Figure (cartoon, rainbow, N blue to C red):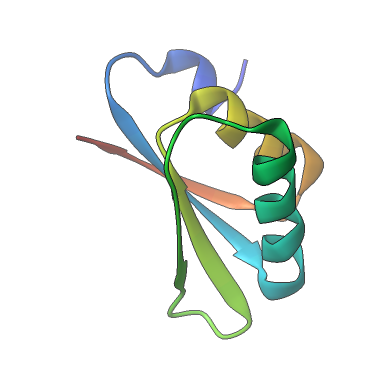
Length: 76
């Protein structure tokens, strides 16, 4: 069991991914037509982007397909 199995309620998932991976994450989001917001911002860490979403399934997809992805979960 991973971190995401324990989430309940309304969470904001902040995913730290490399710049080159951020583009493919956004393309996957568009292709799947996911009905949740996706926010992308520049991370403080050079060469990385932060992708924010409230969709737990999409967050889990990103974590499984991009192994070097780091996640932060905030309650909203």
